[in-house]
Length: 107
Image (cartoon, rainbow, N blue to C red; front, side, top):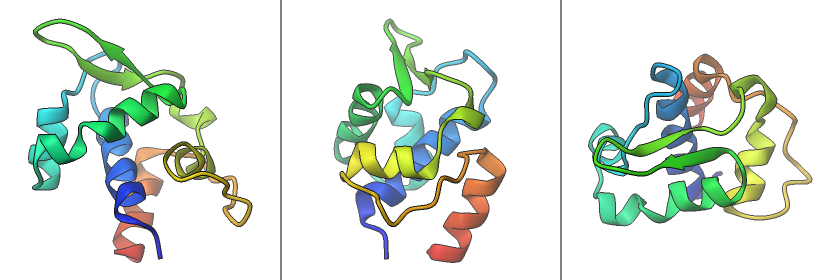
C-alpha cells in the first residue's frame, strides 16, 4: 500500500502533466482537484521540484510545470523523490493516462 504522500504526489504530477504544456498549475488548483487543503499539499510540489520532476514558475499566474517530458519520468522516480529507496518499484513511465489507471486500481 502506498502512503498518502505518494498518492497525493502521483495525483499532483498527473494534474500538472495533463494540462497544456508550459501552463503552470498552482498548489491551490491541485488542492481543489484533490479535495484537500493547499496547506497540506504545499510540501509535495516542493519535493517534486527538488527531485527534478517539476519546476516552479513564479508570479501571480505561477505554479508548477513538468521539468522534463512525462515519458522520461517513472513511478519509481516519484516514489524515490517523496519517500526514499524504491528498490521494489518497477520502472513505469508517468504518462497521465497510466497513472490515472494505477490510482484507480490502488485506491
